[in-house]
Image (tube, rainbow, N blue to C red; front, side, top):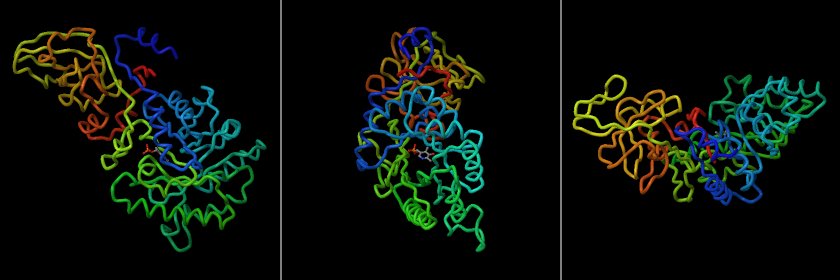
Length: 389
Ligand SMILES: *Cc1c(COP(=O)(O)O)cnc(C)c1O
């Protein structure tokens, strides 16, 4: 994409800028933490957490990743249409009618129950093809996957239990390439739960072997485990958030590893007016000035994924200074008070996320103000703003 053209056509509008060279550096930094024989699967689901799926996928592959993971088949289709040929693991559900596309495009399906495995097998056989699958094991996340026998509902067996996976060994049309699990609490300092999950994972992989199922690629590690749990690296790791330079939680120190955020959101001020004392701003008149000041209007709103919870909270950066958000964030516009910053005029740059001068607004800052996590801040960008690389 010619990003400079896109920028000029779309002005004045807020835009997301992603620093792909810093992204590549983050990938290389993470890669150095794992053994050279361990594959690196870049998790680029949800448009690479809002950072632009195709560009991030390509950059990750250029910097040492050899596998990609997405959740929806539409995301994998987008990658293939962009000419990306690396193996893709579908973390979500695959349907029998998708087998033809999956098998012919090198997309691996996750299998988390025996009925689904049978349906995929039947579809693959009908097409005379083999679908590569990764068996998903629920070792303590409680989301998708075969369960450990310790979690059996009754002695007679659990329909979601690992013993059901034995049936996969006899299914034609399926090739077991991998087995994996996902951590629920690898991002806290106390790794007790994560280590219990690891023990279960090792036990369940051994059970698969007993069932004559031999997954060549065992994998478990999300970003937190890549950074802090080397015994979880196995044959492949699956980092997401850390590649984008964000911490998995405030208990994981990414600065120590020199991972840097790669996203900024900027706009140009579209309107400025001097207002008197006792002047109310935006819907509900929830902000009333206590002295004469200057209010600037910025073209970003909740339709862009800029949360309305930021109303009367948080700030943007103008001329390297903090400008507080005043009044409610609206669908397309947000107002900031720039009375303390001399000479602000329409066309001036505003930083909504990222660095400006000596200041920086992080996704964590915004998440703190809106009661969520950095993942939701960047992933929540609606795609309405152009993502420039
Ligand atoms: C999202 C996801 C990841 C990546 O998690 P991060 O915390 O972003 O590193 C890895 N594995 C699975 C199954 C996921 O859903």
